[in-house]
Length: 143
Image (cartoon, rainbow, N blue to C red):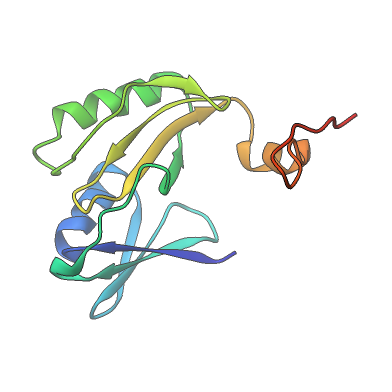
């Protein structure tokens, strides 16, 4: 995979949040669009759609992996402190779920971000563990 897409109202306002708060690299490559990345060979295309923006849902979120549980907590605290500065919407509680410690926040464009720490390499583990459920959703044994 090479990229995904999200929408924003204003590239200028969203870029500030992506660069200053999330620490992502942004490049404006077109009049209505910019690309966003975090040191990988995968990027997000951010399209400016103005008032036709459709809010996202928490289940459709972008994940950001950080180095420790302490860093998750520091970012959670910063999200609360800088909520007005970056127009951050909802911020969930920090908790341990699906093997990771983290929380979700809603950005100024109603896109959701999961800030998490996973002890290991979640991307590799997901595939290395193999299927845990069959096509009908029944648990399978990987012996």
